[in-house]
Amino acid sequence: MSEEIYRNTIDWDEYWDEADEAVRADTSPSANLVQAPFLEFLGAQFPDGPDSYADVGCGPGDLVFEVASQYPDATAVGYDSATAVLTENRERAHEQNMDCSFEQALLPEFDPGRKFDVVSCLFTLCYIADIESALETLYDAVEPGGYLVVHYHNQLAQSHFSTIAQSPHEYLDEDSVWNPETFTDRFELVIEGQSLLSYERIHEVLGSWPQSLFSVADSVDPYPAHRHEPLVYVPK
Ligand SMILES: C[S@@+](CC[C@H](N)C(=O)[O-])C[C@H]1O[C@@H](n2cnc3c(N)ncnc32)[C@H](O)[C@@H]1O
Image (cartoon, rainbow, N blue to C red; front, side, top):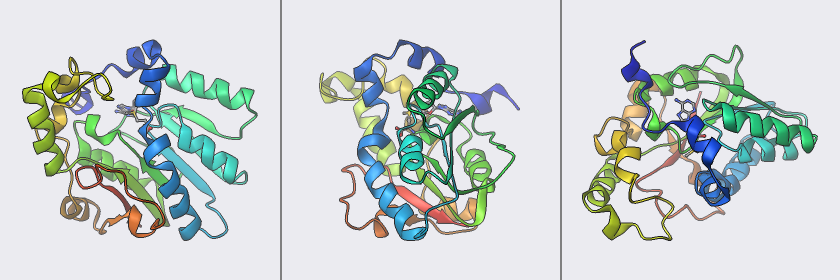
């Protein structure tokens, strides 16, 4: 594979090595924005609980720890490209005696050697240059009858991010989760239009229509940016 396919706008190992608590919280959006609807979705689709769950680009692994805690009989695995965050997650699992594991994976390649009832990839596809290959390899790892759950950026996000990139200091103040100095480089693949998806494109690539996760998890209000950054599930 060419370097272009692996192009990433961030050195994630360095990022996690240097991240303080505030950066860590800002880089774990799933914990605040996705955990509640995702757990409602799992409960609705798997009344007896899922047998297996993988989160790819798991970061600090909040969803993996939560699934392992709520469904102790399920296999829960977190995958990430960054050694630093995987090491921390393994230490946390050991300290808290949690039955979950953490493995290395570098999207767009993903070949875990098994399939899972649910595979998720959250707040990560925007950093992957070959987003459609990533979508395919993630979907390959889903058991028939299972679900791929993804968060992605669409053309509305591209337009919004392009506006911010023209004047980041004007739009991003100190309360923003994004640093105005690094915003444009960080989201270059979105701003360039390279790492975008849509319902139609997901259907063309996977042959199955996505649906909003919030159509199942309807007791939770969608997070504010959900029209620009949809959270969808794709049945297999
Ligand atoms: C913004 S964080 C999101 C973490 C978590 N999914 C969440 O939503 O809270 C993006 C994560 O993707 C990981 N990542 C970036 N590029 C990756 C790649 N090519 N393959 C696998 N993981 C990657 C990073 O190390 C980081 O942990």
